[in-house]
Structures are given as structure tokens and as C-alpha cells.
Length: 321
View (cartoon, rainbow, N blue to C red):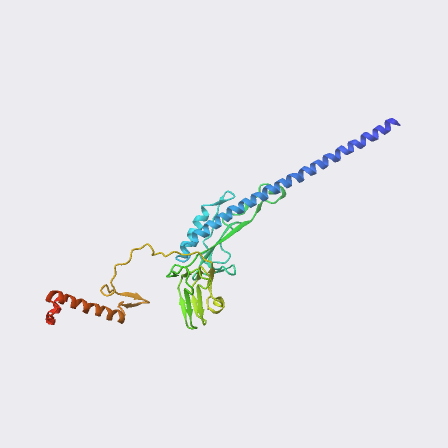
């Protein structure tokens, strides 16, 4: 009887040892799976950061040329992207000359107010770069480290960046006034300020640095005001660009240049304004003032040469021959 009891206890313990082996095996498999998941997740995050760096650099490189040459902007973006790598492969982009919205390099217009990007080939102000490691990309998908153990060998990853060109490349308007009220003063419904491919900067820090009357029109990409604007400026002025208040002060770019040596009465030249050749001339008021000064100078010269009582008018023309 005692022997039978000992046999039953030994059998029970042997069975427990088998269950422990099974549980240890299951636990080890789960542990390895969690470690593999953690490593692959970290690897994916690292690849995403590398792709983001590539997209940021490529967008900035292309943004410098997006307004001057779209072709040059695309090539610069592709070249800079290729200088970066992700998951052991160079980041390769397609030029996307057709400017397809889903392409790797897309030019268009970015609206900062709404945060939207519209693919446009005409008058673009921004470029969008998408760095990819996917099945459809030139570099292909990213290989996992432990994923193949669970029949998951690759994954897709992409990151994008948008670079917007600040301001324009044409003639801009810089209103140099530190604290003047209504430094920018637009009046009348028919009043219009148009700056093609440029910006307007109002340096005045006054609370009403920009003023209006009626419903004038402002045509420009961006309006930067160091101070503020009067009531109703944003609602009444017809302006579809971006307005930025509390903007940075822009110093006078010509402050340190020497004064020009130019006499408007003598140094007359021609200029082309809107395709019309014109000759700048002094106003009638300035001409009359210069005429009086010239007559007074003639009298002084005559008195010095011939004395105060002699005025031989017939010989005055020799002074200007």
C-alpha cells in the first residue's frame, strides 16, 4: 500500500515536470516575439527619421529654385535626397515632370492660413518632397530583422516635407518707418497696390501701422506688418495673400550706401517704365527755381566782371558759350 502511494506521487511529479517544460517553451517564444517586435519597431522609427531628414533637406534645396526654374528645383531636390540614406539604401526620388499629386517631387502653392498644398505648375511658391521606401519606390520596401520569423518580411515607410518660398523675387515695397501711424495708408475703392511676385513690408511698430479708407485692393503674395492695423483693415481691404503681424523689423538695405552724385538739372538720362522710354525732367516748380538761381548767378558774375554800374547784355552769352 505504501509502495503504491509513493508510485502515484512520483507519477504526479513527473507529469508536472513535463508541463513546466511546455510553459517554459511557450514563455520563451513569447519573450523572443516581444524582443523582435521591439527591435523592429525601433528600427522602423529610425528609418522614418532618416526618411524625414532626407525629405526636409531635399525640399529646402528645391525650394530655393522653385520660382526661377521648376526643372532645376526638381533636380536639386533629387540630388540632395540621394545624398541621404535610409535602411542601408540611398533615397532615390522620381522627378515627376508631369507634377502628379502622388509623385515624389511636386510643386504647387501652399496656403499657410489653411495649411493646404495645391499641386500647380503655374506660379508655384512651394515644393513637396516625399521620401519613400515602399513596394512602388525606386529603393523598394524596408526589410525587417525579426519579422521573417512570423512571415512578415518587409514594411512600407514614407515621410514628406513642404518648403515654401518666403516672399517673391520681383520688386517689393519696403516702408521705412519705425513708429509712424498709418505708414501704409490705402484709400478709395479704386485704390490698388500691386506688387508682382513680391511682398510688402511695413516697418512701423505702431498699433495702426496700416490704415485704409473705403475698399482698396492689395495684390501681393504676403504682407508683413511690424505693428498692427486699424479696425476693419483685414475685412475691408481686398487682399487674398497672407498677412503677418508682429513681423520682424527689416533694416534699410541702402542705409550704408553713399549718397548718389546726381544733379537732376544736368544729369538727364532715359529710363524704361512699363515698356515706355521716358526722360526724367525736373518739375515746373523746380525749373522755375533753377531759372531764378541761374538769373541771380548771371547778375553776380556780371557785377564782378564789369562793376556794379555796367550791364553789357550783349556780352552775357559768352558766359555760357
